[in-house]
Length: 249
Picture 1 (tube, rainbow, N blue to C red):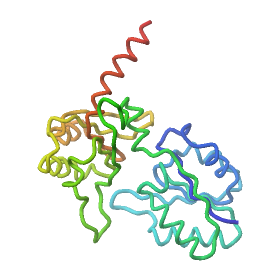
Picture 2 (picture 1 turned 45 degrees about the vertical axis):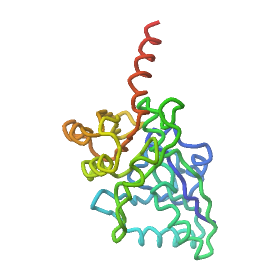
Picture 3 (picture 1 turned 30 degrees about the horizontal axis):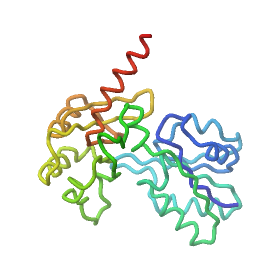
């Protein structure tokens, strides 16, 4: 019956799209990732088969090859399959790989985008990724490289983009910040690390770029987290102050 590769959004279950929710509610099989909010699984029909495909740093419950084969197997058996992925499936989510694999077997594939954490988590932290006064460009990059691939070229990103949003960068945060400063990014520029963005457990640490790794470690910030580097981080304090004033009236 085909495969829907669905973005579940960044964590807050209310951020899922209407189309994605309908796909979950009608699916025969749901293969879901670790960062998918489990409240969304309650929307599936009682007969639906749920398969956990979570991946922890350095510990994959199921290999990507195994996930690919399961998608094809269930779909080939005539099942309606939802591959439910955190955030947006095409933003560092391997959704493109899974779609290509299924289509290589002649299986119809539908892509249902989701809200990605790189925009939503900063928004929940009162940090806009673009702002007319602070930055009119942003880039979403990964701080974790596929084995055998070269490191992200921080020399190009250091000064060419106003705002950097980095996924999967906590392990290498100190290295990343030093590379950016070495290649021309100001160490005084503000940065933020947002842990478990858009959820009730969200935590935010801000500091100048030269100290953000130290501050994140001091506050024991861990994965999942996104890193925001740019003058837009200055908006956080301003927006929170204005919200506090508005709440006082």
